[in-house]
Length: 312
Image (cartoon, rainbow, N blue to C red):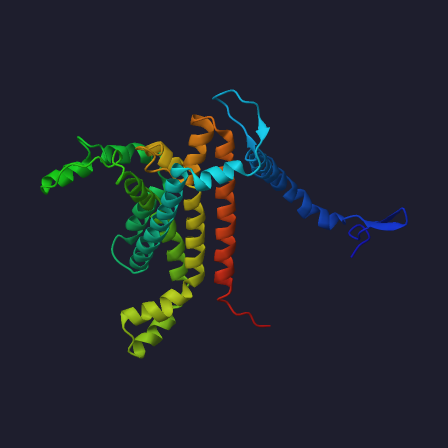
């Protein structure tokens, strides 16, 4: 190595301080903008939110001054807040629906698209379109489909002799109606990732299995699923984390209604902080969401990594 690339030791107060060599400085320079962005727009707001959650901090109301209350906000939302409990349960339902259903449908589509048939390229393109449609266009389309008087879905129901439904106006149906839209939006992502994983499986494995007399189900169980483990874990983990922080689609379609029946934790944060003016409770719910994401991600990764064996 040349002299310009070597780290130059500097002595200060009897201690040696090493300066990064010119070669090692290049990666650091490229990383600095990303680190600054994360600190400015993620870490700093999160720390501010954590701080607010320990105070009584209201934008509107009795006009009480800001004062330290410790864990009172957390105690309130966990023990007394019925809206928080409903939002917590809804978040769990939402995560299961919009993570597992797109995976199952995406796996089915990926397996079909991995076979040769006439018009496969066109079908592949069409199957990926929901992922590319802008959010507000999705909201407009599906609100027309769910429209209670002249919507397409209720029109189909009347044709088969069933009654009309208020899909987005019913406390029992609103969350599931929005979940169906999210499943429709996210399925192409699962399809793309799983299809790429399927195409990486050597065809010789299936040929050998057929020679040994394996059925299609046995090929799927003993070849396809094990060799798609990494892709499956990746898509399910990403999907679960996305689901736990979902906000835009739910708020655009129902704003958490009717009567809070479709609220999830992220929409509840907005409701408390910016509609009710309770920044303290909103911050407490936000910290709860962030910690839930962290714990869920760590536990998932640890459980999955435990299934792998490494050898020297």
